[in-house]
Length: 358
Image: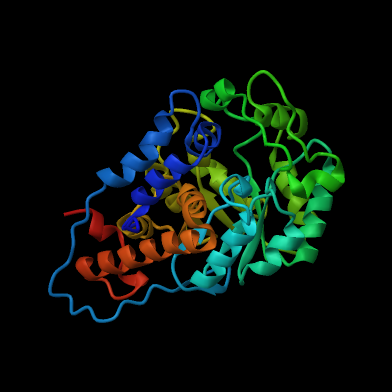
């Protein structure tokens, strides 16, 4: 009998059974004691929905826009590294799934497939996530190539001047298997993870990423691209305000999936503070621990325009490639639709903080 996948947890369980321990730990692990990793999920679960009744809800409308471009659901594909560890088609399968779901796809710079092959497979909008390398020439070249390949925004990750200690990866001596590289960086001589005692990815970040990141780097990036810049990894209201002052057009409230600084607050706790800090000066998205459509509704109630989904897409890719990733997105679409109906919401505009308080 064919296994029935009803929810994201079903995909997580099946992916865990299929992946090697090294890859499963890399995808699922977090920093140090993994407190933030767990809290990201638990935080959404703790929020309760005070639903409206007799609201006369008919067909629900879930479409929205990000930076002026329409998407069919407020659920986008987050940038995650190394998709070919999940399935042979890798990032191309994820891009096609996002296109089929008519939503935003964000490609990680640490992809196993070159951006020139992936971005044309995604629909619009499609964005490219960027780290700042010590060699600014390398960073600038990545931006230029992404523009040429068709990206419509640059997503700058700002919470990774170094890699948080991921003890699972250290114990497994995580590195990419033979035949897989950081493909976008291969032409620039930075495509291979070193083999070390401990995490090869941690060593790669230590050797290559700019550790003294500052707002001057955001200024530089905004000055060298014609595209909007989205800042990803914000945890504080004052940083959020400064990022907007320095040119950010949108930001992602994120703690890197609990993989950087452990004991940071869950993203659902941070989100309202960022919304209060920047108001309507830029669009705000959130990621981290979103496993149900009701979590998406809660994120919108707290002020997010959309959510980004990371690990669930990887689980979908592991289980069923493009169709598995699409199924994950469609499960969340169905669950959001149901949550809207039961909360008395016809459109996303009907979702607000009143649903989270008696």
